[in-house]
Length: 90
Image 1 (tube, one colour):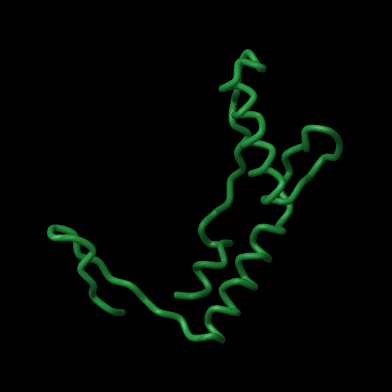
Image 2 (tube, rainbow, N blue to C red; image 1 turned 180 degrees about the vertical axis):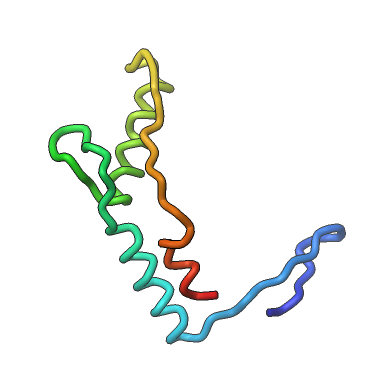
């Protein structure tokens, strides 16, 4: 952990990763976004990957903001922190 000054009143801590830690983090993050959730896709299917869900929700929100949809209710899923790859890293 390295202490850094971000501005006059703002201080923070930053952790730098070496190449192997960066590779592991990226691999685990990709695996996390490829997990399937039980929320139906917009076009077809009963399940989808988290990455697809994020993209579809962004699309539906954009349609709502452009007044192409009457309403927008986010479709969310319960992803417990215990299952998160971040918990493995601590």
